[in-house]
Length: 101
Image (cartoon, rainbow, N blue to C red):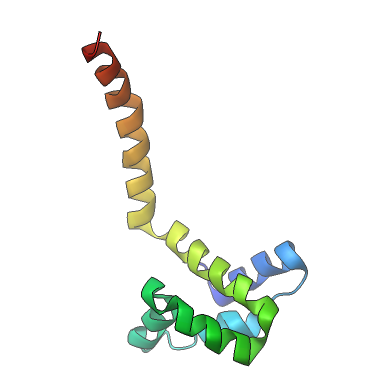
């Protein structure tokens, strides 16, 4: 998963602001994984959006969501699932088409 600094660079490329305080907040508790997980957990997103708006402003909400997206995309399990899904489509879809003929 990208570090807060890497997330900040990506935010800066997207909108010209690093939002480093936001990214640090999301990952500040690396020594306490439960807190970090709460801030990244999809089911907590609505509540976390309220917190992000309050702490960092309306514009930060989008970067909060990008942070979560980027972390999931860098996750090894997520990447493996994407690869397996692509392999399945390339191998089994053509076989199913032949079977139906």
